[in-house]
Amino acid sequence: MLPHQKIEPDDLKSYFESGNIDNKKVIISQFKAKDLVRKVTAEVEEPFDKKDYYENPQNYTAKFHEYLPYVNFLVNGVYWEAKYPRVLCAKELKHYHELGKSRLMGVCDISADYDGSIDFTRRFTSLEEPFICFDIMKDDFVEKINDANKDCILFHSVDHLPAEMPKEASNHFGEALYPFVAQVVKSTNTTPFEN
Image (cartoon, rainbow, N blue to C red; front, side):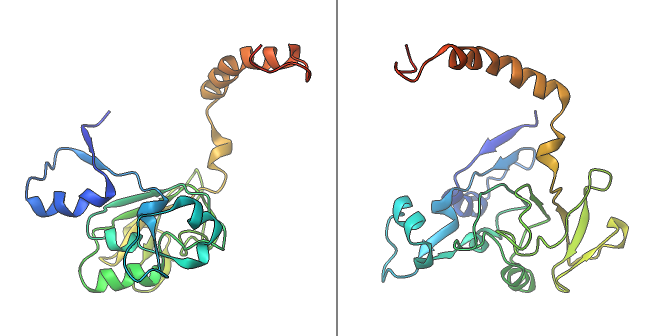
């Protein structure tokens, strides 16, 4: 495993501004719903209320773009529905790119929702050619990495990737699950499961 350091999203700005950056470590930040949105109906920023967010997503707006000065690669795997704010839009990415404030070099959209939480996921890649480039300024894809320019980021979104689980992993998962399946088969609906 590569040397790495975990940093909370809210601490990314201070980490980069501190000047104590270790370029020999991969920085990992896991973004949760509270890091991706803010309430727009509040006059002052309120503490994030996950229950309210899921019940009233129309009262929230995306804020991931504010992290673009600190994020090099985005691996997106969120569950998303159209009622929720998107994680990242091409328009926001272009704005930060034009200002010279985006560090983003690539997006791996594992969710693979067409026009979904990443609105420029309008193409899917394949296992044979898993990477193409997205031209931020043209809002379009460049097929060959060799044709990329300074306005391009790497893009990956294989829509059937979960179905490509290696046989060994599938066998291991099956072996680990088997004892539980056996217990379920032997159980009845008249006694609690833990017995």
